[in-house]
Length: 220
Image (cartoon, rainbow, N blue to C red; front, side, top):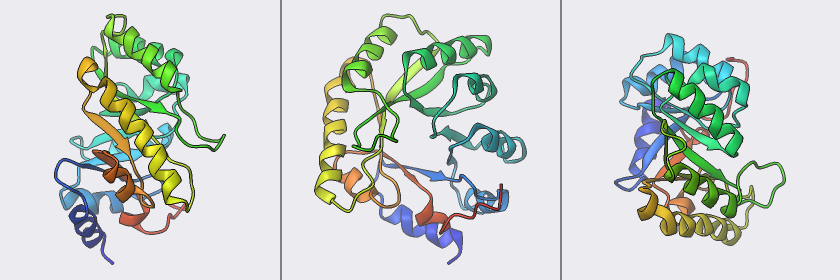
């Protein structure tokens, strides 16, 4: 199926107000351009090196999302152009983003990554630690940071009730803090579970396989 058809079919499954981030990790420049030419502007990458290679050659109005784990020593490379960082999972990382954002005279939009899955392999903050970071940012200590909301990944499981419970816990946390901290983004849901995420209140989904097909790791 042509990628433009996959994009159309996927967009038709999304309610109004839900943003699609096309997960383009391991995908070729030509594949990304095909979706870009069909109107897609939000693309998500997991690895900084791959993101830098693509950002250099692709149209500059693409809104790049860093959705993978971010090492502190890589922050300086993406701050000049990044649209949103989804994976802020520590106060120390936030401090580095603030430092580099100030150097570049930019305000960086970020999401706090919250650990809602049971797998030990998942990164993320506890609700308690996320609440503390929200209060620190609200106090004015991070003037070049804008917390837009939260990102979470559910357990990789066939148990839909478990997935729903995990997404619901993050949605409740988001609603508790939305007004006080002027939040507007809840990024939950990928190709295998995004309908459940949307049902639970997600307004941003990160979809790769459903758009591009099975990953091709020879492209990068």
